[in-house]
Amino acid sequence: MKYSRRAKLFRQVKADYIDFLASVLWKLTGDRELFTEAMQYSLLGMWRHIEKLNGPKAGAYIYRIALTANSAAWQNRIGRNGEISEAQVSVEKGPDEKVSRSELVGIVRRTIAQLPARQSKAIVMRYFEQQSYEAVADKLNCTEAGARSHVSKAVATLKRKLATLTECEE
Amino acid sequence: MSKESIEDILKEIGSEDVPADVHKIARETSRDFSETLMRPGQHILWSDIMKSRIAKLAAAAVIIVAVALSITIVDKLTPEAYAFEQTLEAVKDVQFMHIVRRDKAGQIEDERWIEIGPDGFQVRYRQDNPPSRLIVEDGETVSVYYKDKNTIVLYDPKDRQYQWIGNLGEWLKELTGQSSIVIEENVDYWGRKAHRVRWLKLNQDCYVDPETKLPIAVGGYEISYEYPPEGTFDVVIPNGVQVVDKRPGAEPTEEPEWLADKLADGKVAGTNFRNARYALAAGQYEEAAELFAKVVEVQHGRNWAWFWLGKAHYELGEYDAAIYEFSKVIDMFADSQMVPHYCNLARGLAYAAKGMKDMARRDLHTALPVMIDALRNIEGATLFDYADDPLYRSLPKDKRPTAQQSLAVMVNRLRIITSQNFGYDPYVSAEENEQAIAAWEEWYENSGEIEFTPDAELVPIPEVVEEAGK
Image (cartoon, rainbow over all chains, first blue to last red; front, side, top):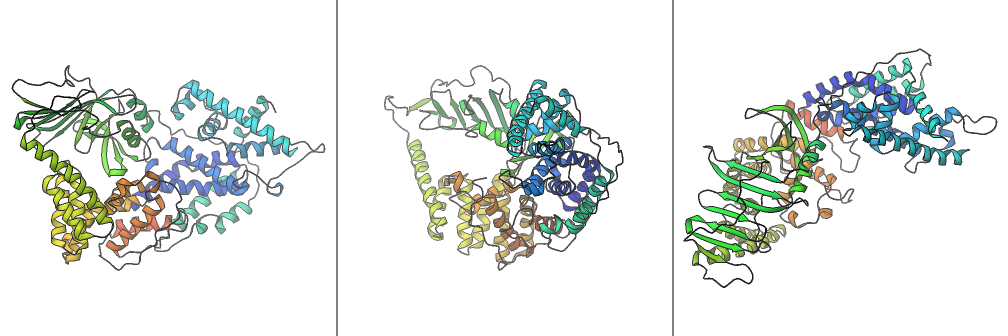
């Protein structure tokens, strides 16, 4: 693709999706520094794969870019081994030393970044954008039952991972 | 933790409004990114783009204002959008393929029927090249009918098999996977709507039917999927035709002299072709040229023999011979409406070496867009790598050049034909090289001027294998 065409498309796609990216990435990160980094990764992803964002399939691909960017940003923070230092997360333990609600929210976000691609997409569409299962199925290119299965598996994975994490961190 | 509480947390996150300052950060990051990445004429490192001062400040100096901001996300997804997965799904039901290639006058010059087995390989096959040859494989016997000689030769499929593409299942998977990109949807293809798809490995355009999601054309071949007429795969021996049965256990039959010569020539050509490839790879150009010349003498249509014969002559400084041989290959593909870009590059270099600048420029301009495109879609470099290494076809997948190595070699090819150097460094990350790739693209669009520079500064080819195969 010609450079000027690439640049023009990039500007157009950016204008179309900047609010969408801001919304999804904020919900995935909940942290301004992580958000900025994920946004930068998303922009780079858009630039590098702009030909895939040229057409009606763009909307589906933008999810992939946003989720990959989110994972990369989290990975930079928590390291490839999945460990996160206490200093890097805003832990607000209550008087009884149990994991607080805000900490749980942080852990859920971090765990979503480590889910398989289709599961994280399903979670974002279903819970962050309140889409119907029919719409999720449509965008994941699977049946409605398949979409329910992806969401259910994702929730189960989150539950399992969170149980381990909260046990360790409590 | 209960499932319900996780769902509650997810819903809580989902109902969060995006703070106004976060939107501001998004827009500033976006502006900063564009300005940094698209700054012309400068090599900018990934670290300049990521975590830039502006972005950091924007994040750090955030003013937390609790503004209830309603966000409307416009759903831009279109259910009808074409996805490769749809083709992959559709091909699972394919049992028969009907493939036709026509000459310039519209007459069929190659017609094939293939029955595909569940493993993706052909089960039965028919190939008609009118007027002289008809091949049929019924699953147990391969018959080759030389109509001009009024002779049918029967083989065991284990000894001789004809095919269009070996593993059709694998080919379709490649065509629908990462080796392809959708160029344009719903274009006009001879009066019918189709999606135009670029098959990166061969730099060929294919067309996919929007309704059935099946490929309908590749190169000069048209493909359809109807049931074949009854008897298509039957081995039929017409009355009065001489039969030479070479199947194991068959009664020995007298072999016509022309057939004995043909088979012997084929065997010798196969051996010569193999030895010639090894000679060329070892830098024994005279021996390679001699052997490849023997191959094309008996197998005039063997394109790779012609190409590597040209390479051997090029290395020997025999540019006229090389140009002739590369031209043979280019002409051969013209009949199939295909462009062998690697061959245009080779011929362009031969013209340049002879000082024929205009001819060189014309060839190199044909190859250039594909070479530039390969910087971003590295599968597009496969045939260039294949052409440069006559042993490539014998290499196991994990011994073939990595994407990183292919990219470095492609950058070197570009440096030699353009004299441009945009600071590509094979030892830094893909993100850090993004600016160099963007600079090549920008240069190609704004100037694209060819300048043969045989002594161009070349980048080292990385030794470290980052990923196996491509």
